[in-house]
Length: 115
Length: 112
Image 1 (tube, each protein chain N blue to C red):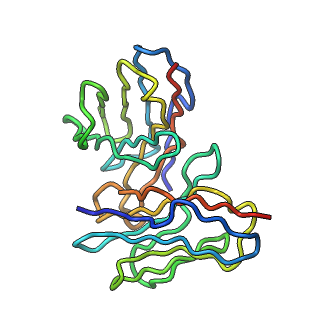
Image 2 (cartoon, each protein chain N blue to C red; image 1 turned 45 degrees about the vertical axis):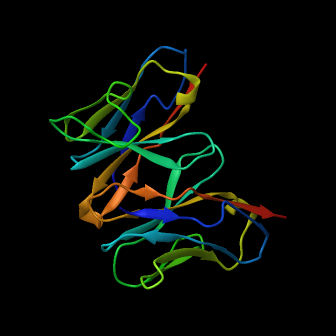
Image 3 (cartoon, rainbow over the protein chains, first blue to last red; image 1 turned 30 degrees about the vertical axis):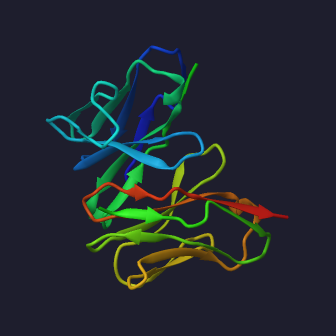
């Protein structure tokens, strides 16, 4: 199994500020994804983090609001910019590791509350 | 494009009764199917998965799911539920190197 470390695990943020979430994996992975889970909702894919190039965003998510970096095969960051209360969510990092049969692993999540 | 439908948003059931949480998917290619569980105020945990081989897969805590290709379903079952099974259950599908697509979730409430 992959070990995924996300930081911060929880935070309370002021409206209008930005926060960067880090995702560190214990070994190189080919694909990394960022999801959002709003309160009482399911998980929605924000983007695929591509190593060495721009992230691929899903419909409804834009780079200006959710800039993503992936400088190498074990690390990625997601920034939530100019936060509003609607951004209060759990943000999850996920990685794909094909060695164990197309299994996808999730971090513990970063629980953000915007006040 | 792949999609997942969880037909029941909430399922109340008495303790020790059986339960089935329904999941149907839409995809034009071979898929991998997953069930995740999220206990109150906790993160996501993988419950079980179907990748290939036997269509019946089991978890360590008594849940099982059966992949039915003709009905494009992957329903989750447990013959006797416990209070501790109260949680949100998410069905998800992947086409291999694609990210998981999740259903909207089913809240299982076990009543004493």
